[in-house]
Each structure stands twice: as C-alpha cells, then as structure tokens.
Picture 1 (cartoon, rainbow, N blue to C red):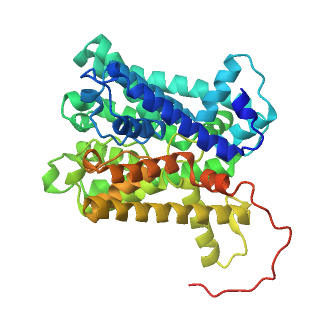
Picture 2 (picture 1 turned 135 degrees about the vertical axis):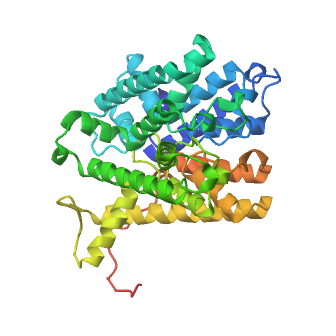
Picture 3 (picture 1 turned 60 degrees about the vertical axis):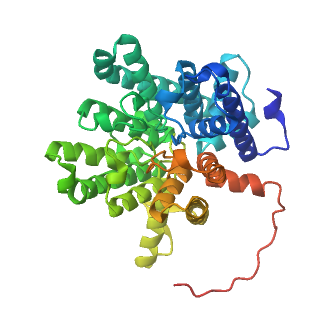
Length: 447
C-alpha cells in the first residue's frame, strides 16, 4: 500500500485525502448510465452531492433515492454509506488484513487517529471487533425489519429494503427507500409502527455511541465503574439527551391537537424524534409541521451529535460533557475539571472549546449564506446548515431546490462534519513550527 507510506502526510491529512478520493470514486460510479432509472446516469453535480452525502453518512439528497436511482445506483449508495460509516482508514486496514499484508506502525497510528482510540496498542484487534460488531448488528437489524417488510413487499424487495435501512440506520446515514409511497417521505408512513421505529432507533443509538464504548460494554458488562471515563460520559450524556428530547417532544409537541395522536403513538414519535437527530436523518413525522420551538430543539440535538469514534457526526456528546464539567468546576470554585473521580487534562478543555466554537461558526455562517443565496427563511436555512455540519440528513424540504452555490456550501459542511473538526485543524496545522518556550502569564477579565 504505497499511498500510506507517504512519510510527509500526517494521519489527519491521510484521513482527509482518503475521504476526498472516495467521494470522487463514488461520484464516478453514480454517473454511469445504469445507476439511474432513466438509463442516462446522473449529472456531475447530482452525483457529487449524493456521493458526498453518502460517504459523510449525512442523508441529504437532491433526488428521491427510490424513484431516481436504479437498483445498481442504490447498491452503490449503500456501499458508500457502509464505507463512510466504518471510516476510510478502517476499510483500508480491513482490506490489508484480508490481503495478508502486515499492518505497520504508521498505519496503526493513522487508524488510532481515525477512530479516536486512546491507545495504539491493540488497534488491529479493535478493528476486528468493529467489523464483527457492524456485521452482527446490521444483519440482526435487517432480520427484524424483514419481519415487517417481506410480508408487505415480497421476499426479494422486502429483504433489500430491510438490509438497506438497517445499514443506513446503524451508519447514521438517513438514506431511505420509502419514496415508493411518497417522495422524500422517509419513515412517515411507518411512524405508528413500533417494530420499524424501535428497531431503527436502536440501530441509530448503537451506531452513535461509538465503537470504543461498545467495546467497553462488551468487556466490562454491567460493571459501570470499570468503564473508561469517555464511555461513562458518552452513555450518561446520550441517555440524558434522549430522555430530555423525549420529554420535550411528548409533552410540548405531540400533545397538540393538530397531530391527532393517542398516548402510545405520541410516545413512539417523541422517542424517535429525540433519537434520530443524533445523527441519523430519518423522520417519522412531517418536520415542516413541527412548531418553530420543536424545530429549534431539533437543531440543538443535531449539533450535539453522537460520540467520538462512532458512525455519527456533530461536535460530539463528549465535547458537550467536557464543557458542562468545566462549567461545574467554575460554579463550584474547583481548581480542576473533574468527572467520575477523574481529573480532565487542560488540553481536553481547550480541544472541546475549540471544536465547539469551530462548529458554531460554521453552522451560523453556513445558515446565513444559504439564506442569503437562496432567500430561505432563517429557520429553514439554519436547519439545513445544522443538518449538514452534523451529518444528520434531516431537512425541511429545501435541499432539492438549492442553487449550485448553496449545494457547494452544504457539501463543504458535510465533508467537514464527517472528517471531524480536530482532524481538519490538525491537518492544516501539521508541519507548523512548535515553540519551545512559554510567554509570561497575564490574566484577562472575562464574563
């Protein structure tokens, strides 16, 4: 694998370049004549947008996936989703292992950077665990969904629908094949079906907590105290966000008369609406019918996203957890940022602050540009911007009608959101001279 032996490329630069090359390959495949139902193939712009959305596991589309793409085109999109969800480097390591090649130190280093692993030791074994977990979870999810789809759609179509949605859900991609019912309808036709909604929500959650957390759960079982601090923060913060979102949507949104839901239907919709924005992109209700407050809450859930080393995007739940712990340290007049009996290093707080500010600036600037270029309402523009930067895929219906300039902005946001804020910052700053001294300290009044 000569590409990975380029000594001048840092791990961050390799990750960024890998995603870029994979997007170009996906674009070329989607431009083939037999990828679309009309036999003409997609144009470069449509193919590039769809490939970017699939590789970044976002789910924003300019054409309904079921109605526009042929079976082969859908298969290409599914393959891109799977590679994007696992990560370009994870796929490269898997190919090298299957080919019998030895995984050198540099490749292990890049792999560690790709999945945000804390240690270099055991990284190849961890990769094997990731692939076994992905295969098992996706096949189980597909089997459960097939129980519903096969009786209604036939064996062949039902199995394909089950597999496609299981992979898309676990990879937090949000692509769907429900356009046969109504274009861009996502799971709205199945919003009252507990089996479909709960299986999809479970797959989203498992993909979103991250492979390192799943490895901790497998190794330590019910002994929560043995989990790493990162896994504890991921599980606690994810549970709090899901519970908080569920309570909000159940009591303040789906109890409104306009929805006409009974209590079980409202509970199911509220649970799904609290899970999907982080960061899957499926919706079981019409998002445009949500109140402005609910749309704003959805934007907040999208921006937080999933966990590091997961298939989801966003500025990550651990970033939010570190910032909240720092706030508690200030409020309680502590000298250190603490959590679960551990002290967080200052670098963790600096990284969290930098990532949060970077995502916030990109989200705001992206939304304002979309609003200015296409004259979109601010709520709609910010919704699309948050969905892109957090690689969610939820939309208020504006994406298919965006101008070419706005599509470029959305693609850039999706790309940045998938490769990660730290990866981009480290790639840009790689090779810069590091100062070997420290300036004198001087305090600055803040707040």
